[in-house]
Length: 257
Image (cartoon, rainbow, N blue to C red):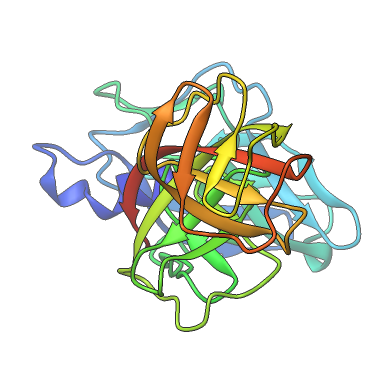
């Protein structure tokens, strides 16, 4: 992604770095031409940053040499009929070895990749939620505020994607999402009723959530904090002492992408 960004913004630079212009494959290797070369190319301490893609073998290191043309180099290949591509510096923290005379390094390239193609970002759907840097983990939860306040426990796919087993009908980009961080799983105490949940030192505030796993995983928003051991919620019929209760802390609200 970084390379794509650099390539797509070159016009904003007060100068342009040398970039791949054209290439041709002969019997012994590639002739590669570059744009934006100041005076001539220089090859310094080549440490295997040039590689060719060989059919059924993968990427193999090779050597590069300067040519009489100041804008071109020659990259060796053993069997041109088996070569499918060439790349230079295509890794994290490459050891750059190809410069022009002004000292500007040639940008890494890979002829098997189209750097003008920017893949479409995935979008939120009924089973998946895309929120950049959501800071959420497995067994945390979300509430979709635009889909009847639907509650779902989540599976963390990566830093930007969450997934749930059961869909949220109609969910799409632009929905307002409340993220909840799971605190604990506890047992409801003596005095718990349909509306009141007794939990020793619950640490909840108004707007946080509980989920009663014993009564069909019914979730409820905390409507009132009575004291440090008691909260009031919208009634859950049959709720009582001994029920397994999941506690969730309100984190923040996002908009899905």
